Structure formats: C-alpha cells, structure tokens
Image (cartoon, rainbow, N blue to C red):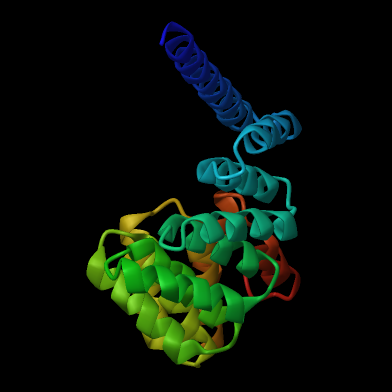
Length: 237
C-alpha cells in the first residue's frame, strides 16, 4: 500500500511540475510579446505546445505574435489549431478572420466573422471587422448594413461612422458620407484620416473650399498627401 501511494504521489507531483513549467513558459511568452520580443515569445509558446499540444491559449498567443510579425499564414494555422481543440472558441474565429483579412482573403474572413456573430450577436467589433471585409470586396451595401449595426450597438464608437462614410463615398452618396464623417469627428476630433476622408467627399461634390479646410487640418495632424497635392494643383492656398 505504501509503495502504491508513493507512486501515485510521485505521478501527481510530476504532473504538477509539468503544469507549472507550462504556465511558466506561457506567462514568459505573453510578457515577451508585450515587450516586442516576438521571436523569444514564439519560442516560449512552442515550448508550451511541446509540453501540452492541447494548450489552446498557447496557440492563440503564438498566432497573435505571428500576426505582429506579419506572418499571417502561420497565424491562421495556429488559430485553426485552437478551433480544432475548441470549436466554440469565438476569439479564435475572430482572430483568424483578422488574419485572413490581412491576407486579402475576404470571403474566409467574412465566414469567420459571421461565425463569431452567430455566437455573440451583440459584438460591436466583429460587425466593424465584417463591414471592413465587405467594403474591401466592394460589397458596399452589406458594409453599410454592418457599420449601421455596429453604430446601433455602440453609438460612441467613431469607427462605425468612419466605415459607413467610406462606403457611402464609394456609392457616390456624398451627403451621407459627410454626415457620417462629421459625426465621427464629433466623437474623435483628432483623427487625421477622417478629416482626410471628409475632404475627399467634399472634393467629389465640388466643394473645394471645404475639402481644402479638411485636408489642411489632416496635414496639421500629420497626414499631408492630399493637401500638398491640392496646393500644387492650385485647389488650395
């Protein structure tokens, strides 16, 4: 009996030591990733996965870190592994959708975002992401629908107005675009890109004075390309 008990205690101690080692590598990897030490972080997450191939969050964190390095294919592989371990892990679908979108694989991104929305129908950020993917596919009506849903869920998030403004601009709906950009700037008055985009909408409407004013403000905030172009071409002083 003593020997059986000793063996059981020894096994438990060994398993506990392994778990401690796993979490040590995992915590170190997270800290290294936050510090920008991506290669070292990835090495830590690899050690976690060697110790436990079912450690789902190690795949998630390694995938995120691959994303920081622009290695979206490897990120997708890790997020897919996480999904295979836990098919109901919404975060893994959302992150894989982002990686697909970064690679220009918009159909796959939309499928993953839609999966997240089916699980969490009030997730504002996923509507914004799916709206972005629809926008890049040229599906502007669907983009507008998703951005409108995001705005309804969180009227204080300027990204919904910005995205919807871009889609309205593409559809030639200048007044609606300007209205959305103006609302976005009410919420975030230091956003150079929104001044830039509202200036474009004014320009397409032939309202050059307003366009110049917005492009000048965008330049003051660090985004000068259109303002410099407009000065060269005598649209702006």
